Image 1: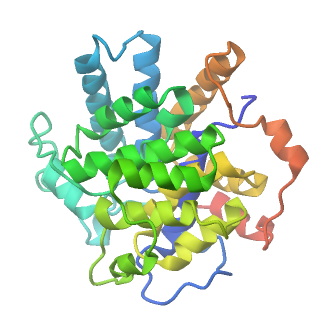
Image 2: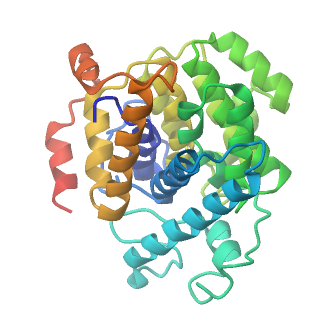
Length: 344
């Protein structure tokens, strides 16, 4: 691959954030990027399979004018397929119906509503409940704003991607808000103008982060769009955030559902700032633990390269060689810590 695969940004946030999800202790801004819990969760795996669905739609020349049903079916089919792959890694010794080996799990409400939990797994795959307003829609949407060049396409495709499992009004709104923020940042729109547009279109309060502090409490374990999406947007558009690492550290130190909030945030940050090569490597190392998803990730990367080379994508991500050349340093080196991930 020549250009940085845009899927890696959500994967980075997911993998680093998983180490601190619903931490019962306060996480300082200088936390260690990697710990024993670092690894991908459903945020990464579903980001990858939904990107595969998107690639299929583009390759089959589906369009919003006359193919919306086909697009929805593609997103739905690949969502189910991605969950089925993930079930291969289910850890029955972990006493949580949705916990998996090598780290990561599906949100309890999502898993129990979509599949009826492990006991009901596979019994209602055709007609599951899909009225969730959890943050599963926005966590997996990042491929869309990196592939399309118009706001109309980004808004409509992000809505269609949410519908298979998160068709509640808040679930759709949260998915579209994250997608639009990535898209506007990718276009080079200033933060203050992005904030104005997001507030106007979606009605989120982006001026008071303390309003959303309830997502920090372990007892609540809030994984919903109305509370987690605004926090992500506030951090992303904070004028005091000056780098990818600054934003990642701030969202994780805020606490709560850190793997998902970081997975939503990092694609926005990547559209605003250079991404450290070390974090790209961490994300790819974690993803390699799941060969099926890693293969699809690579295939999407080659597809993305082709679209960039043919001029189909405006404002592409940097090339890997340019990332290496810019050599953005992290505050804490990762070399010795990363070795632990490769030995899982």
